[in-house]
Length: 523
Image 1: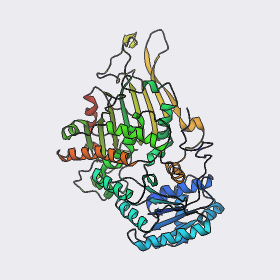
Image 2: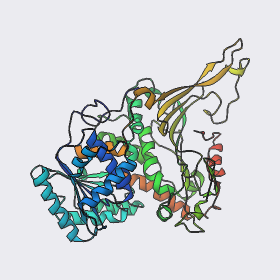
Image 3: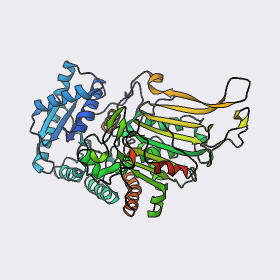
């Protein structure tokens, strides 16, 4: 299996490339929050220990807490010790911490940005960061427009004497089509599209990037990757956990906004896209947007027929009893927020016409799993069977019988690829049973894949936006999701809760596929 294609430069080992990042000052807004502590600082520490950050590098944390540089460094050291995959080394940490600064202040206060500007100027002089700036919005989405405005007013988005100024914006980018358009307009009023890096950490996962390599670097499967050979596609993003103390956030988001709009539709686009003319940012994203635009935006009646929503009740996961969603802290006792979504999508283009994509995402499912399963059509005449050569019974709709070939790309947690095909059972009878070939990342390469944020931060330092989301992608995805929300608004809310924690979702999701003579896989 070919390793992941590098976006720029050449892979040597892990994330190493021939092209090194330039000097840079990284400013993290929301630096004391959960994202910074769990993901960003551990990723930066690993990049530093791997020799992938420039010597002339510094981090400026901005938040409302009244810390100083030393207290901020101590908090970040504790975060790296708890959440990092690279062990702490005292001497190396002390050197790393000399590049940490902290600026307290409100995000709407111009004085905060004056202080940030002064600290960045000091770092240019003392650490040689050369005027290059990368701003990371590790904040609630409601702050994004204000941060763009304040950065511009302070002159911090100006690119002078060849230096760069870039902004990484966390998902969700808006909460519906109108707000996404408004945020895009606010961002592009003060910055160029090439300066804006809309992040979806799923695209930083090695196994997600390997979708493109698997398809376009191996001639064996790409000729079969179309409606003539594929019966249907299933994509599952399942989580065994609940809302984990984020009840207030989830009440405003729900699974459709939190998972489907970004992670799940990105997986659809990568699975269905045409080969790009080159492996660069615009060429790859041009093909992804074509897929999103080829998915018909449903009307209210189509939403009723092609979507299912659910909410988990009390149940058991991993052998432990767990509460229902409505009993979670911060959740209304009569909440109508969905924690599960299943959709039947059509892609109306030459490659995929007539091939349904069934996608689902949910919380409190039996296991944590992200998987793309390609189920191929049956052979034209099934003259081998399981009983003395008699043909096996087939499910209506094709592709769901016992001998259907299935190619499964496992994104997490058991990263790898499996292929199911029919083989003769040893013995005198001509019986056929399905068998499976497995490729596992860890076993095959013998190295731990980098964390998604390591790859994405490194790409942002290098100015490579291939694995980030472009404006038109954001708006196309929100157009579909907003239409589903509007269709739901015209329906009566289902009788929530409608699935037990630790199960694979509501019965209506099974019925969605059963109407087509198919069934969900059990990953």
